[in-house]
Image 1 (tube, rainbow, N blue to C red):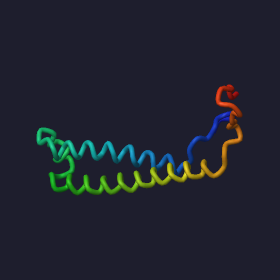
Image 2 (cartoon, rainbow, N blue to C red):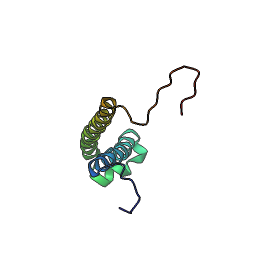
Image 3 (cartoon, rainbow, N blue to C red):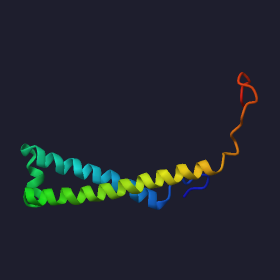
Image 4 (spheres, helix red, strand yellow):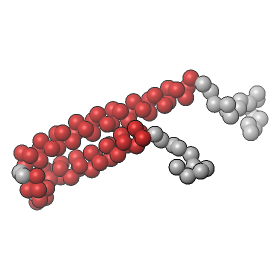
Length: 100
């Protein structure tokens, strides 16, 4: 990482993010191939509609698991931010006074 750059996410978060993104695209492509027979090219690439359905189901499992991991990471991050207040937050003594 370059000097002066801030690390925003860890490697696990990046992997989970790309699993969600790529499995979502995969599910869109395979779902369109099953729904619209004019897009049967997708089915012929994998050896038929039965194989396409099997791959679609496994893609759904990957998407669901990675989505649950994403929600868990968000939840953990939000719950840890409630534990300790931010040191830069300020409170106003009167409602009309501007807070800086």
